[in-house]
Amino acid sequence: MQTPQDKKRNLFIKSYGCQMNEYDSERMVEILEKHNYSSVDEPNQADLIILNTCHIREKAAEKIYSELGRLKKINLNSERNTKVAVAGCVGQAEGQEIIKRSPIVDLVFGPLTYHQLPEMLDEIETRPGQPNKKLVNIDIPEEDKFLQLKGSRKNLKSISSLLSVQEGCDKFCSFCVVPYTRGVEISRPAKQILNEAQELIDIGAKEIILLGQNVNAWSQSNGKDTDMTFAQLINEISELNIERIRYITSHPRDMTEELMRAHRDIEKLQPYLHLPVQSGSDKILKEMNRNYSSQEYIDIIDKAREYKQDIAISGDFIVGFPGETDDDFEATLDIVKRVKYAHAYSFKYSPRPGTPAALKDHQIDEEIKSERLKTLQDLIRQQTRDFNSSFLEKEINVLIEKQGLGVNRLTGRSSYLQSVHMDGDPSFIGEIVKAKIIKTRDNSLEGIIL
Ligand code: SF4
Image (cartoon, rainbow, N blue to C red; front, side, top):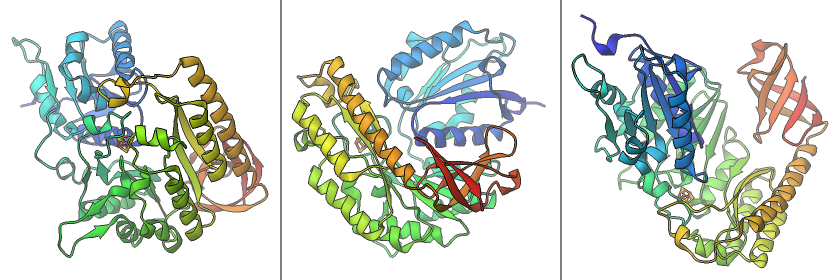
């Protein structure tokens, strides 16, 4: 007898926001493939639509409600009886409210419960003679999500693969919702991580990107001989048959000298450090509850460069945080000039409901925020351009990840995470090639394979 779980179905999943969400979406696809779902590119071909949402950007929840409005308008095939699910941080934060405001939604769940997808889908399955059921599942589960997901990475074929090692955050920066939506900091056990890394290698990964909201806060400390630091974990992974290792995103408070030294000592660990500072003003850093000063941040960068001279530094900035004066903003420009970033992300501050900063007085005028953002982005763009230009005529290693746009075009990444485009045969995909850089652009390099 065929059960509802045996039927062949189509899945449309849309992922918003960070690489953690991208990773979670990959894992949801893997779980559902085991239950006869195949991915499709259009929502109107789907039996199940999942919006894997992010709460970091401005008005995140409103944007999801607009997307749900659009989904309602497009012709959801009534014969399919398409189910709509909202996952991720907006799901976690809004819960029942989503179903109240958007009745097309059948299921709401958060980043901590997606491993229960088959059971949740079974619960909302439309059964003859029974009313449609809706479900909200945002409780923090007792079981280990990753243990439940074990061994499901078999179908993912990605040269550069994401591997979540740490989830949640205890830092409570005053502008951020993550500690409320992803829960407290949890480090996955080293053994689990090493097993998953091996699975990824077995299916063709050449690069592993270790992910975490505070990835460098990862540690295994149970007072036993299995205690391990993040640098030691990277070292263990480097013993596997993998070409490159990266990690993202780090917090300056958790940046140990041992980890900086690892960039010198572990060849496979790439010379790239994403270390958000957010502001160059000590007053604003305090208001943000970042727990470091601008000088402490600079000291970390200097130390990292002592160990690995060519390390590319990347960062995140928020401009227009409540109370930010012209002098505070100047201090941000100063730190950018001092550090010289290879690349950085910058945003205007926008209040997230439920965070302490949203309640602060002295919110900054939008026009001032826009002006400051433009000034900062012009400076960062110039630094990225300078960084890229310094590669002209140089020979560098490039990991070819995929075909580029056009016949016999390839796209890969340098060790410093720059996109590198070049002509070449698709058989190079998955290889590290030596390339000479013949042209540099604001956001990429052009090379020839040597
Ligand atoms: S460190 Fe701060 S910004 Fe980063 S996830 Fe934690 S609370 Fe959010």
